[in-house]
Amino acid sequence: MKKLLVILVCFTVLLGTVILASEAGKLLIWTDEVRKPTIENLGKQFTKLYGVPVTVQEMSFGDIRDKLGVAGPAGKGPDLIIGAHDWLGQLVVSGLLEPLEFMQEMKGKFVKTAVDAFTYGGKIYGLPFATEAIGLIYNKDLVPTPPKTFKELEAIAKKLTHPEKKEYGFITQASQPDPYHSFPFFTAYGGYIFGKNPDGTLNPCDIGLDTKGAVKGAYLLLSLIKKGLVPEGIDYQTMTSLFNAGKIGMILTGPWAVGGAVKSGINVGVAKIPTVDGNTPRPFVGVQGFMMSNFSKNKALAAFFLKDYVATKDTMLALYKADPRAPAFKPALTAVAQDPIVKGFAENIAVGIPMPSIPQMSAVWTAWANAISLFCTQKEAPEKALSDAVISIKKTIKCH
Image (cartoon, rainbow, N blue to C red; front, side, top):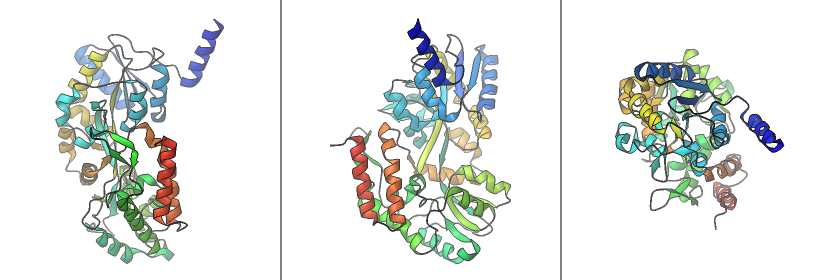
C-alpha cells in the first residue's frame, strides 16, 4: 500500500495537473492554449455531426511530449496530441505513438516536406496541418524588390548599412550563435546534419557539419561579419526591435516575427532566401500535426476523426486562422496562397529540410553552437571549430 502511494505521489508531481484518461467511445485531445479554442470548436462540430463526445485538455506545448511519456503507459492520457514533428524520435522509440496507416493513401494531399517530416522508419506518425521555415523578411519601403542572389543581397546591405545610426541592410542572428538560423548558410554549398542510409533513414554517425560544403558556408557567414554588414552576436530581440523601428532592410527569420512588424507599421514582405553561387540554401522546416497515442482506447475512432474530419479544407483553414502558418494540406494552402506572406514562406518550406527527429539530434545543438561562436568571433578557423564539433558529437552519440 505504501509503495502504491509513493507511485501515485510521484505520478502527480510529474504531471502537475489532473490528467484525464482515454475512454472508449469518446475522444480526448491534448493541445496548447493557442489552438485550444479552435480544437474545442471543431470538437463540438464533430460531436454534433457524429454524436461522439470530444474533450480538449490544455497542456503547455513544451510539456505535451514528456507528459505523454508518463501518462500513456500508466493508462491515462489522450487519444490524440497536437505537437511538433521533431518529437518523433523520443515518442516513437519509446513506443508512445501509433502509426497512421491511412496517411499512406492520402499523403498526396499534403505538402511532401510535411509528410516526410512525420515519417519515421518508413511509417507516417502524424497528420500535418502547419509548416514553418525561416525566410527573407524585408521592409518594402527600404527594399522595394527583394534580392534573388546573395550578391544582390550584399549590394543592398552595403547601401543601407550605417552602424553609427544602428541602421542595417541585412541582419541575421545566425552568429549569436544560433544553429537553427545558420543552417541555410551550411546547406548553401551542400553541408548537412545527418547523412542517409540506403533505406532513406538518417544515419546519426554520418555528420556533415565539417564537410567542404559546410565549411564554405561557414566562411560565407563569417564574411558578413568581417565586411561589417552583420554585427557579431546580435540576438533576436535586438534584431526584431530594430526591424520594427524601420532601421533594417532585411532579416532572416520565421513567421513568428511578422505579426510584431505589421503592428509596428512596417510594410512587410517575405521572399525566398537568395541563391548562393547558383545554389539554393535550404532552411530547417518545422511541422506541426496530430499524432495518435499508442495507448488510445479509440484508435479506429481517432483515425476516422483525423481522416474524414481534420483532413478537410474547412478544418485546415480554421487551424490556419487560429495560428497563421503555411498549411500542410494542399487544398488549404491553395486557398490562402494569394497571401504574399504565406506564399513567401511556402517557397522556403518547399526547398527546406525537415528538422531531424532522431534522438541523436539532441547531441548536435551545443557542439554546433560552440563552433559557430568560435569561428564568428574569429578565435578559431571554421575548419577546426567544425571538425572539433563533429568529433564531440560523435563521442556523445558513441559512434565508432
